[in-house]
Image (cartoon, one colour):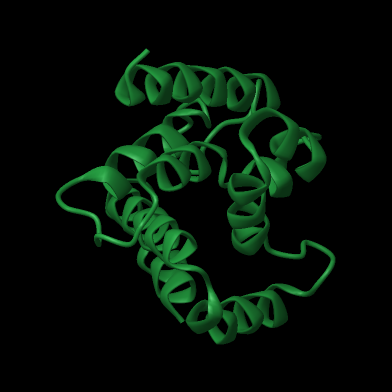
Length: 149
């Protein structure tokens, strides 16, 4: 099996797992099924040329799974079993601690971005890009200002 075929199969499995985990969840504002967001993040992350030292497989799978630890009952151990320790590690890098107050969580994320792995930074930028593109349509200026702060 070619590498592209293997990645396609893994992406389908990641999308299946994300669909199960995010079942019933909707995007704020648009009301679209939540799964649309991680699939768009994966597409955005893979647009154009990735840096030569970025692992395309890890970027693709972590993008599809980037919100699973934060918003579903899926565990890091399950991600590691299904997709490997590296994918699980990148998803963990991208997972915010929901027990922290919003401003503290945001500060921790902003302060920590510089130490993210290359793959996590690519996914994080694609995630922010997707969130920002949806905001203009679905959210008011107050939310957008707060999100960008």
